[in-house]
Amino acid sequence: MRHFDLRSLHFGDAGEVWRRVPVEVDPFVYGGLDYEVPEGSVDVLLTAARVGGNVTLSAEFETEVIGPCQRCLGEADVTIQVRGVEYARHGESEGEEEGEEGYVTSFIVDLGRWARDLIAEELPPKLLCRDECRGLCVACGADLNVEPEHRHDEP
Ligand SMILES: [Zn+2]
Ligand SMILES: [Zn+2]
Image 1 (cartoon, rainbow, N blue to C red):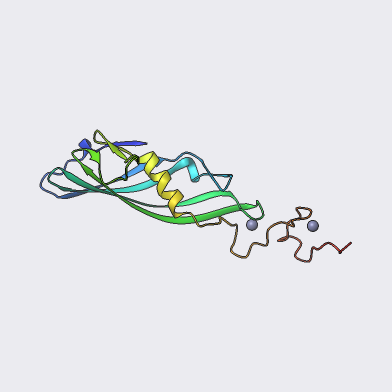
Image 2: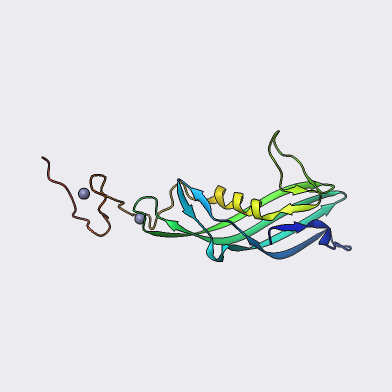
Protein backbone atom coordinates (compact mmCIF):
# COMPACT_ATOMS: atom_id res chain seq x y z
CA MET A 1 0.00 0.00 0.00
CA ARG A 2 1.18 3.53 -0.67
CA HIS A 3 -1.87 5.60 0.12
CA PHE A 4 -4.07 5.40 3.17
CA ASP A 5 -7.59 6.84 3.33
CA LEU A 6 -8.23 8.54 6.67
CA ARG A 7 -11.96 8.07 6.13
CA SER A 8 -11.43 4.33 6.56
CA LEU A 9 -10.63 4.94 10.24
CA HIS A 10 -13.61 4.50 12.51
CA PHE A 11 -13.00 6.46 15.64
CA GLY A 12 -16.33 5.68 17.28
CA ASP A 13 -16.07 7.08 20.79
CA ALA A 14 -12.32 6.67 20.83
CA GLY A 15 -10.13 9.72 20.33
CA GLU A 16 -7.33 7.58 19.00
CA VAL A 17 -7.06 4.61 16.68
CA TRP A 18 -4.14 2.80 15.14
CA ARG A 19 -3.43 0.48 12.23
CA ARG A 20 -0.50 -1.59 11.10
CA VAL A 21 0.03 -0.84 7.43
CA PRO A 22 2.51 -2.46 5.06
CA VAL A 23 3.90 0.41 2.97
CA GLU A 24 5.84 0.06 -0.27
CA VAL A 25 9.07 2.05 -0.30
CA ASP A 26 10.84 2.66 -3.59
CA PRO A 27 14.62 2.29 -3.82
CA PHE A 28 16.37 5.61 -3.29
CA VAL A 29 19.69 7.31 -3.91
CA TYR A 30 21.82 8.43 -0.97
CA GLY A 31 25.27 9.96 -1.39
CA GLY A 32 25.12 8.99 -5.07
CA LEU A 33 24.56 5.28 -4.32
CA ASP A 34 21.44 3.11 -4.51
CA TYR A 35 19.71 1.80 -1.38
CA GLU A 36 16.57 -0.14 -0.64
CA VAL A 37 14.59 -1.68 2.21
CA PRO A 38 14.11 -5.47 2.42
CA GLU A 39 11.25 -6.66 0.17
CA GLY A 40 10.67 -3.00 -0.74
CA SER A 41 8.24 -2.69 2.13
CA VAL A 42 8.08 -1.41 5.72
CA ASP A 43 5.52 -2.23 8.39
CA VAL A 44 4.20 1.14 9.58
CA LEU A 45 2.33 1.63 12.85
CA LEU A 46 0.00 4.48 11.97
CA THR A 47 -1.71 6.21 14.89
CA ALA A 48 -4.41 8.82 14.43
CA ALA A 49 -5.62 11.04 17.27
CA ARG A 50 -8.64 13.19 16.59
CA VAL A 51 -9.76 16.42 18.20
CA GLY A 52 -12.69 17.97 16.35
CA GLY A 53 -11.70 18.37 12.70
CA ASN A 54 -8.02 17.99 13.52
CA VAL A 55 -6.15 14.74 13.24
CA THR A 56 -2.64 14.16 14.53
CA LEU A 57 -1.02 11.32 12.65
CA SER A 58 2.08 9.53 13.74
CA ALA A 59 3.96 6.92 11.76
CA GLU A 60 6.45 4.60 13.43
CA PHE A 61 8.52 1.75 12.09
CA GLU A 62 11.86 0.01 12.20
CA THR A 63 13.58 -1.05 9.02
CA GLU A 64 16.83 -2.21 7.58
CA VAL A 65 18.42 -0.20 4.80
CA ILE A 66 20.60 -2.19 2.43
CA GLY A 67 23.13 -1.01 -0.14
CA PRO A 68 26.80 -0.29 -0.73
CA CYS A 69 29.15 0.88 2.02
CA GLN A 70 30.10 4.49 1.29
CA ARG A 71 33.77 3.79 1.99
CA CYS A 72 34.54 0.38 0.53
CA LEU A 73 31.42 -0.29 -1.61
CA GLY A 74 31.00 -3.64 0.17
CA GLU A 75 27.56 -4.60 1.43
CA ALA A 76 26.17 -2.34 4.16
CA ASP A 77 23.09 -2.98 6.21
CA VAL A 78 21.85 -0.59 8.91
CA THR A 79 18.73 -0.77 11.05
CA ILE A 80 16.96 2.49 11.77
CA GLN A 81 14.05 3.49 13.99
CA VAL A 82 11.75 6.04 12.48
CA ARG A 83 8.99 8.22 13.87
CA GLY A 84 7.19 11.12 12.24
CA VAL A 85 4.21 13.29 13.11
CA GLU A 86 1.87 15.05 10.70
CA TYR A 87 -1.02 17.38 11.50
CA ALA A 88 -4.11 17.46 9.33
CA ARG A 89 -7.14 19.68 9.51
CA HIS A 90 -10.30 18.59 7.69
CA GLY A 91 -8.29 16.08 5.72
CA GLU A 92 -5.47 18.41 4.62
CA SER A 93 -1.94 18.75 5.95
CA GLU A 94 -1.24 21.91 7.83
CA GLY A 95 1.66 23.62 9.52
CA GLU A 96 3.91 23.07 6.55
CA GLU A 97 6.37 25.68 5.43
CA GLU A 98 5.46 27.74 2.41
CA GLY A 99 5.96 25.73 -0.75
CA GLU A 100 6.42 22.50 1.16
CA GLU A 101 4.00 19.76 0.32
CA GLY A 102 2.26 17.94 3.17
CA TYR A 103 1.52 14.24 3.23
CA VAL A 104 -2.26 14.51 3.56
CA THR A 105 -4.48 15.68 0.70
CA SER A 106 -8.25 15.17 0.55
CA PHE A 107 -8.08 12.67 3.46
CA ILE A 108 -5.50 10.55 1.64
CA VAL A 109 -2.17 10.04 3.39
CA ASP A 110 0.76 9.58 1.02
CA LEU A 111 2.40 6.94 3.20
CA GLY A 112 4.85 5.86 0.52
CA ARG A 113 6.43 9.32 0.24
CA TRP A 114 6.20 9.96 3.98
CA ALA A 115 7.94 6.69 4.89
CA ARG A 116 10.67 7.38 2.33
CA ASP A 117 11.29 10.91 3.66
CA LEU A 118 11.39 9.62 7.25
CA ILE A 119 13.99 7.02 6.30
CA ALA A 120 16.07 9.68 4.54
CA GLU A 121 16.02 11.89 7.68
CA GLU A 122 17.10 9.03 9.92
CA LEU A 123 20.00 7.70 7.84
CA PRO A 124 23.46 8.08 9.39
CA PRO A 125 25.66 10.74 7.72
CA LYS A 126 27.73 7.93 6.24
CA LEU A 127 26.31 4.49 5.59
CA LEU A 128 29.10 2.04 6.34
CA CYS A 129 29.50 -1.75 6.39
CA ARG A 130 30.90 -1.25 9.91
CA ASP A 131 32.07 1.75 11.93
CA GLU A 132 35.76 0.97 11.53
CA CYS A 133 35.61 0.30 7.78
CA ARG A 134 39.02 1.21 6.32
CA GLY A 135 37.68 1.94 2.85
CA LEU A 136 39.62 1.70 -0.39
CA CYS A 137 43.15 2.74 -1.27
CA VAL A 138 42.90 6.14 -2.94
CA ALA A 139 45.75 5.27 -5.29
CA CYS A 140 44.65 1.89 -6.64
CA GLY A 141 41.24 1.07 -5.16
CA ALA A 142 42.41 -1.98 -3.17
CA ASP A 143 40.07 -2.93 -0.32
CA LEU A 144 41.96 -1.97 2.85
CA ASN A 145 39.69 -4.19 4.96
CA VAL A 146 41.07 -7.18 3.08
CA GLU A 147 44.65 -5.86 2.90
CA PRO A 148 45.28 -3.86 6.08
CA GLU A 149 49.02 -3.76 5.37
CA HIS A 150 48.51 -2.39 1.86
CA ARG A 151 50.63 0.65 0.98
CA HIS A 152 52.52 2.07 -1.97
CA ASP A 153 56.24 2.76 -1.67
CA GLU A 154 57.12 6.38 -2.19
CA PRO A 155 58.60 6.86 -5.69
ZN1 LIG B 1 32.96 -0.64 4.15
ZN1 LIG C 1 46.83 0.94 -3.40
